[in-house]
Amino acid sequence: MSTDTQVDWAELAPQLVDAARQDRAWYLTLARELVAPGDRLAVDIGCGAAGMSLAIARMMACGRVVAVDAHPAVLDAARDHTRAEWSDPRVRIEPLRAAIPAETAALREALGAPADLVWASAAVHHAGDQQPAVTALAGLLAPGGRLALAEGGLPEHHLPWDVGLGEPGLEVRLHAAQDRWFTRMRAQLPGSRRMPYGWTEALQRAGLSRVTTRTTLDEQPPPLPDSTRRAVVEALAERVGRMRPTGLLTTADLDAWDRLLDPADEKWLGHRGDLFRLSARSVHLGVHP
Image (cartoon, rainbow, N blue to C red; front, side):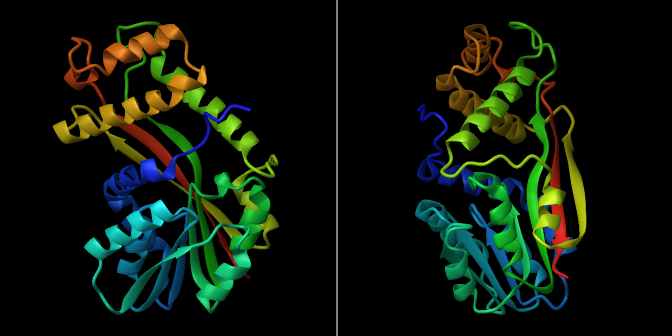
């Protein structure tokens, strides 16, 4: 079976730190809404570089934030990032290695108490069977505790429909290729099983109540600052590079991307003043009765 869907987390770890810094404002906005005054224990599942762990810690008066990930290289990035960014002794940020749902019992024991808040961003979709993973996370909660899943939304767009190279709709086809790649990735996970319903239904089936969804629009219209334009071009280059060996992009589209991503080419995206950022991110919330 093809292995082009395997994620090299050690290679991605530095990018996770960059992403955590870029998303700092988004994390803070959500943490401000999610953290309650009496919260003393929060858990960040699939923590990446611990961007949300830091945001939650900033909203807590005291207590612990446990940053959980299954991959040692990711936890190393989280540990380094929190050491650089956090020094308030009233709230401890503790990295912890655990895989969900397989090691839920060990995680519960390590926590030592039910959690007031569990956050999981783009983590549950890496579980072969997603419903048991959601149910396992719900089982970590104290009565009145909240489980927030950041899954879904709309992919980020950056380019006009017609960029002047190849067939119009180049970025739309890149999104379609990523969607097919995601389907392959899900199918190759151990114990893979389809979840033919949405995240709010999954939260309800996990026994949670007052289930809601909040979607945040992230928009930066043109012209982008130079630093943001560079970040957009780098992100597109990374996405195209990930798709290149999969066979999911046509030769014509790859030729167009090669020119758009080549700084020596007159069509290089870095020269364009019409690049933008537009996305929508959804967070699904359920409360333990």
